[in-house]
Figure: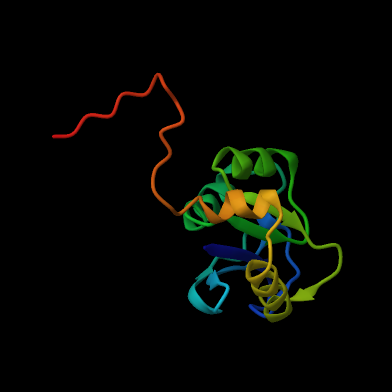
Length: 137
């Protein structure tokens, strides 16, 4: 499962999603975690109401199950949730390594329903929609 973190320093969750200088993405399992990629964004991030700044961030987290943020605007949160990504607000800056450790411990036990759902985001396609037709070529 991939987890994204909005960060200003690549060490802590300490950034508003839209204003984050960096988004780091980790692959996480019950056995461990590894950095997949760090995405760096420019300096012109503070213009409020500039929805275009969200598009590149949404693109880099498209295959993540969870995104940790210090804050996220309503429009951005709606777009993240519509992408089937679970946003989690961290009220105080928190080290990314600690969050990964806690998540790893949860995965070793019985994850809560929302996390089980997030875990299955990467797995085989769901055929829960009867109106969808699957054609094989």
